[in-house]
Figure 1 (tube, rainbow, N blue to C red):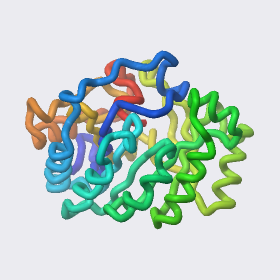
Figure 2 (tube, rainbow, N blue to C red):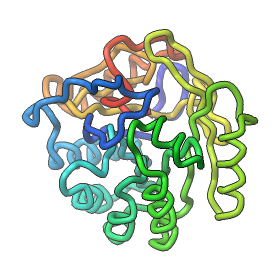
Figure 3 (cartoon, rainbow, N blue to C red):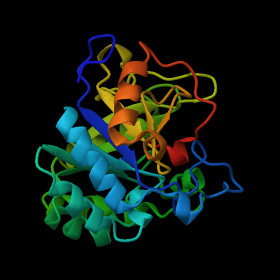
Figure 4 (cartoon, one colour):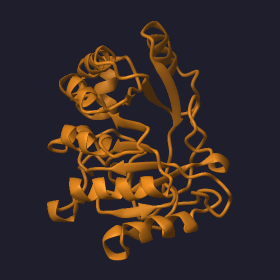
Length: 266
């Protein structure tokens, strides 16, 4: 698929839940958020149907996000359902890693190919502060389990405030170098102000070469993370929503006042 700016769109990011088992300071307010009702969340059958139709239109790369995707019940079954769709060449998940030690092997056996894990610091106390209660060592065990399960590459997403030369970022970079991991540095973003940068070591934030659409947990197809535009797959039909999002894809991101990172993914 080509968008109005002749960019090839072959990547669909699917947020499967707005729920998370952490409360990271740059993602959620301290007192939490109002969670979606179960009836409003798209089913696994709907997601598989979206993937099938998206693939028929030119999508071949799928990534599952959240919230935290591993907290959704039977997430391994969803991975299996997507992996069965003929034409999906790249299937990945972005996770905070807290539950990864438990799920890495089943996910790999069900067809997951690779994984991104969020890790902003190797200081256990600071990790707990950033995530408001998270345990660094559970994440490190999850990363190790992912490698043992054969998920490759394992990429580490490290959020930075100003620079990848910050002490925490440098420590994460060294950890990755020593353990055969790929690191990506993501500058803190702000949806409401439109502040974002190109990911160091990745392609996110590079509007000129953007190749993605997004699906929210409530079934809204979005052309851009930094845009309020969205098209309901239940109202318009899946093909109609995809095509509308494709045609509405902006040349570059602006602001998003309708969503938060916890309910759309990063």
